[in-house]
Image (cartoon, rainbow, N blue to C red):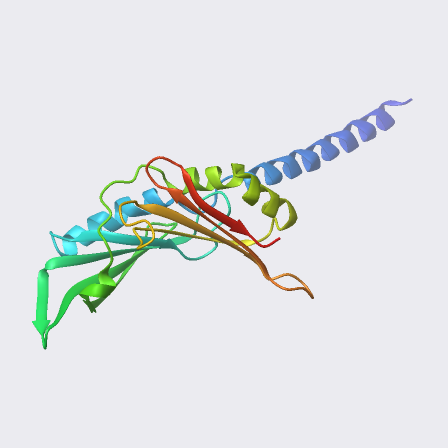
Length: 206
């Protein structure tokens, strides 16, 4: 084998190595997080809410754009209200409330309105599990794990609130929906205690 042939083989191997390395980096990056977690966004939303009204109280959050089954989303929204803005007219009590939208670049948008007190929701004061923690608990649950094994590309949505069903608990509600192809939609949902991680309810239509 002459020197020229050897150089050609080495160059070919080097190019192949670069291609494979690029593919590996791409696949690794594809598995990395995209977006932000609920708690990451809430740090920004809390600051905006305090500037809006110093007595602002947090009552709800939800995922919006491109949320995934790992607990990340490209955008979250957070709901607050201000007790000091209480207004009573015709025996109807209203408060000023605001939706604060936080995207993955930490840009924010506010949408403020007067809301009837029954629509405000219960203040959330104590919760320790971030959206990624709740997502991990959900994925380890046998019912959700079985569902995702069949519908791995299902759309995923997250919500955190105190509901009538669990009036003393801040609860993560995670919903999965696969619209299917020439088939009926398949959905699943799970409720997770945002303090303890206990699974409170789970159901799946596989």
